[in-house]
Image 1: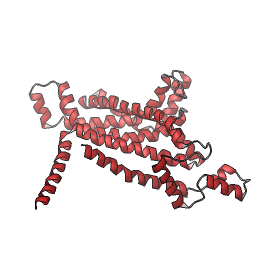
Image 2 (image 1 turned 45 degrees about the vertical axis):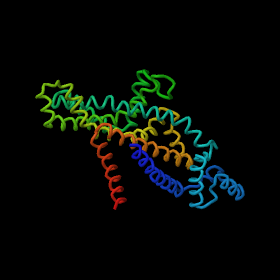
Image 3 (image 1 turned 180 degrees about the vertical axis):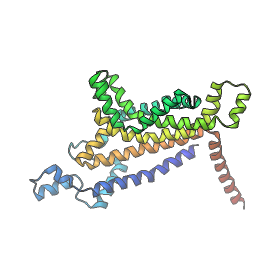
Image 4 (image 1 turned 135 degrees about the horizontal axis):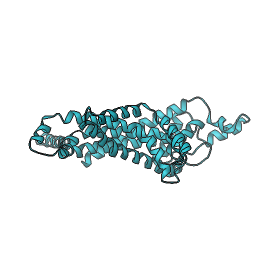
Length: 325
């Protein structure tokens, strides 16, 4: 198990390196000059050269790329904002916990609400409950997150005045951002759970469990649900990337000072250190979640863990046999 985790962590290095190069190349080739944006039109060549040297933009592509990578590796330095001159890493320290909290609660809601709802829809197939839940999930899946956010602000925030429409100053202020972030993906988890449950409950071992006199609750919990968790966990894991991307919209609509608003402000102002650092951090979070999903596979299905262990044993045996020969 430890070797597998170390191997997966090592595989994250080339992935992160590839993301870094791609994002850096895109920002480098993007039309526009940050130096001119900062100085305005009334600059002199001397001022331009001095500002470019200050921002490390006086080198070519490979010089800037090498400097950026070296600063991250050696000093964990993602650079400074071109306009505020605040280190990007310092902004991450205050903004990432907010975005991570919203994301974790949203993903937890996907599991705690989406899975039971999908199970209910599958157990009561072709009933009124199933039709209502299926129709509702289809509508929510087809509705963009920003539309839900705007409708929630207008109806619950402005008209009814039940919840605040900006910031996270109170418990009620978290409701709309969390709903906006989780509802579109929640419908996907519900439909995936329903589909897999319908497939599993028709298997022979489910009929055998019923013939033994086991209650329906025990059959659903210990036999049916456990055997359809892997595709559900996959959907929940991939939804983390959707939630992180949705934070850009959610945080800007509700004026939340998280990673999403930070990235959006960097895009608008062409503040490349903010863009490069934020995308790289999001990619790292997604890679970590993928590792957790793989570990969840082993915990859910002992066959996957046994397969990995047997593979290691075969490699060790082959090595010993070759040594003897």
